[in-house]
Image 1 (cartoon, rainbow, N blue to C red):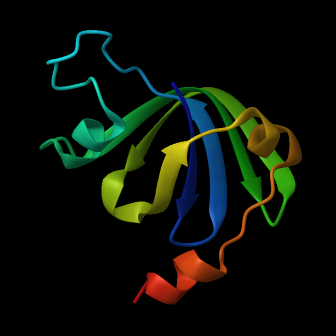
Image 2 (cartoon, rainbow, N blue to C red):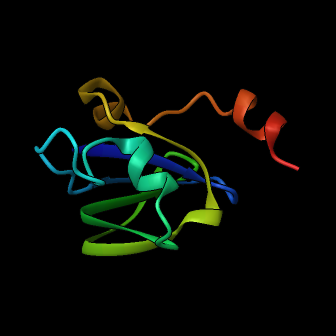
Length: 94
């Protein structure tokens, strides 16, 4: 599953996250991955952007869950434009 992440320091990350196709697997939903006991999420085929400018691409990345402000499944239009509406996210971060 392709996901997009906004970190607490406004770095945008796009990457592939492995989820299980088995319906009752602990890795079958995005929320399961966020709520399990592991402290990191592993992404592959990663693109990192800051202020809509590409920073780097890498084959894999482990991201610390507490550094995530927002995470959702990526839509193809979001990936191609690399833009975010972050006002509502930053308002909720203390």
